[in-house]
Length: 146
Image 1 (spheres, one colour):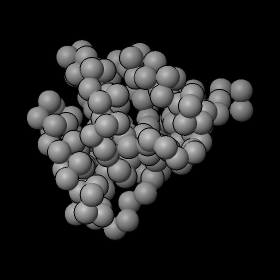
Image 2 (cartoon, helix red, strand yellow):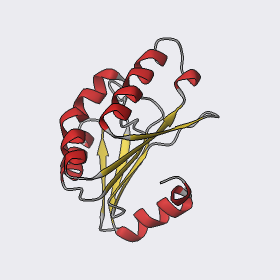
Image 3 (tube, rainbow, N blue to C red):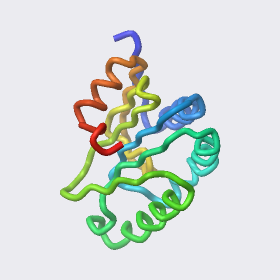
């Protein structure tokens, strides 16, 4: 697949942020965990995207399903997202998928929690092919929610 590239925790964010900056219509991020520290990475770019009328959707675990130390961080981040105009969809039942669909053209998938990763070793595959991004969107039945 010549439209894909592999990234680890060291190379992911630089490329992902570049992709985000290019978005013109929609950002979908599934990240079961959200931390205050990692959300700082996205503060400026999310606000810029929203100003440019890009819709942002975050799909994450209900904070009540987190351990005690994670619950307040997740709740604070969700409240901040909703306050600035990001739609947050909370899942129950051990939600654990990690992916992003950007403008339904670029698909990121792998093991890295996009909105919380700090010290773990991870891998993410970037697929720059609309067919695969739309396939994932449809497979997850996201059209029912977005």
